[in-house]
Length: 380
Image (cartoon, rainbow, N blue to C red):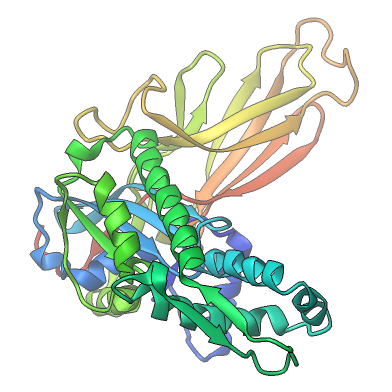
């Protein structure tokens, strides 16, 4: 059982499965990292059915979020999201590296001549950044160091005030992202009973403090070694054994605002089955069909099935050319788009669409779909 960030591409996840096979594993199953971290922090058998838990899993590569509730013998993800490009801990090191380059202009040319130089230097920045942030007064702490292999005339100076500035800015951005995630999921802080901080970045007291300032009156789940929770949770899930299903209806928002369900809540990843739906393009002059795919947010008080798109959360769009040339559909005829959809072992919903008239086709893999993890042997 291997954890994956919520919003990395299906190609990245498929590569992860192939790597596991090359390492000798006969079968590999994927789970979202924040939910696995929660399982690593609390054995599911001891999770309260009344708790709605927000997991903030902030590590070196990504910031991942999930809202999880125990539902009988399963863990239901009410919502998931993730940032893979702006808020990973490595991005903090990249910003500090740029500050060092500005400090010593000759460093840029030396990095350009040494392909692995940026990564080697960021390893040292990470180490010294932690030293600074662990001090009682980090703004007052500067660290001088000589990176090996660069032949500099003067040492580099990682300034405490710069480290604190960058860490504070990113913590505020992450806090905004968390509140945006709650709003987009149709929830607010009053719905959240507990929060779990996982991942190495969440070890930093300054960052934890900034995040907690935005999560007023939410109980913090205290745990040791937050950077190890995902691996611990994967091991625990392996011991239980589990099945993966969709935790919310997946479908398309139609032009009249209604929601058309394509994959229902409870659709099993293990089925390996696709469902087929036909959509009529009602405008005979339209040269393309536009699909807005997503889920109905899993607010259990509203119910999981709705004919309207209230609670719809968009996850991706698809454009499909219908007519090969303008006016092809004369005489009031209509194009029909046939759409095939299913969920793969990489935890992505795949969609393939084909135009009946134009013959064009398009496919897409959609990540970030909330899941239901049904555990074997867990009392309902």
